[in-house]
Amino acid sequence: MGGDGCGIIGGFPVPNWPKGIVGAISHSQNFAVALVGRSHRYIGAGIDIEKVLTASEARDIFLLVLSESERKRLETQITAFTISLAFSLKESLFKSLPADVQADFGFDACELTTWGRSGDAILRVTRDLGSHWRAGTEFAAQFLRRERLLLTRILLER
Image 1 (spheres, rainbow, N blue to C red):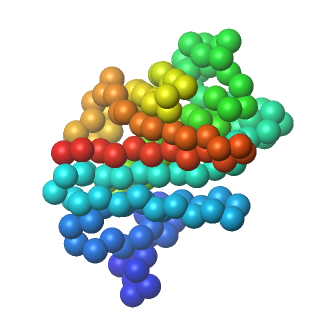
Image 2: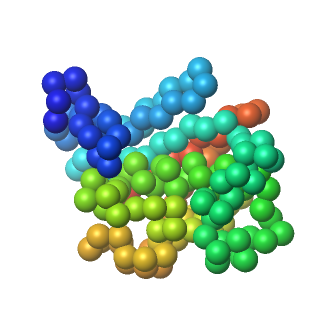
């Protein structure tokens, strides 16, 4: 870890949290957010803030973000918001996972299964992630949309 408070995972700088703390940061446009928790309670914390994609932007990343089975299952519900939500939730999950699992994580590692107006969502792992999370494991997540911004978070409890 460098002296500037950052480490490197997958070529990207990540915060070097104090001992006993887990967390994540994100920024978009003029906003920055952080989510932290005590490591005796949480394995990880993930947060992401994104602008909601335009229809054109969503078409550009549609195949990258949604797996083939997600596209089939969500067929009639796929919108620019759905693609934005899946992207942001998967980013939050990635940030919440330990570094050794992050190294083997891609958008195909999980699928958005449900979400609701209440701001709750579920992601399901599509393949084993490390030794702790087997294919089929589900992660609870929360999201909040305000105008053109979308905030997502995942806390992995012990």
